Length: 92
Image (tube, rainbow, N blue to C red; front, side, top):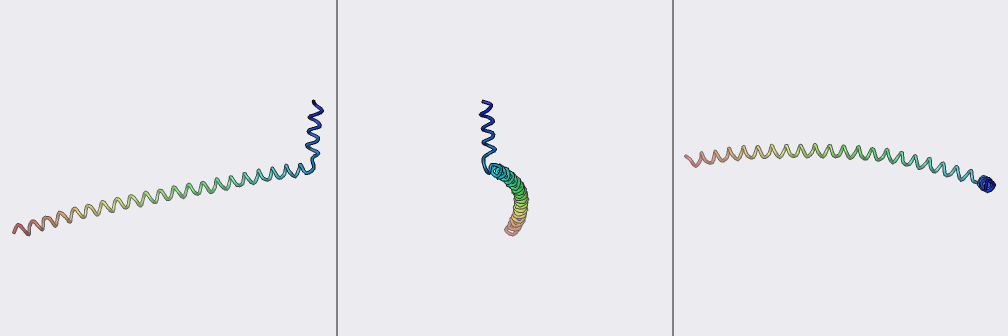
């Protein structure tokens, strides 16, 4: 059995071009690692962009609600003033 392992290992080393194959596999693994690193950077930028968009939308919504509240308050004020003027006019 020990001879079989030695023979198999000798055959594996004796295959022409095996070192090129190993180098190609190692290079591909390194490239795949670089790809994943770049994907992680892009993903982090995407998350940051999304968070910024959410912050801006929240600020926009708050501004809109405040504006609507001011409009409603002004409407109530004007409506009350006009109602009083109308009552004064008809009360004469």
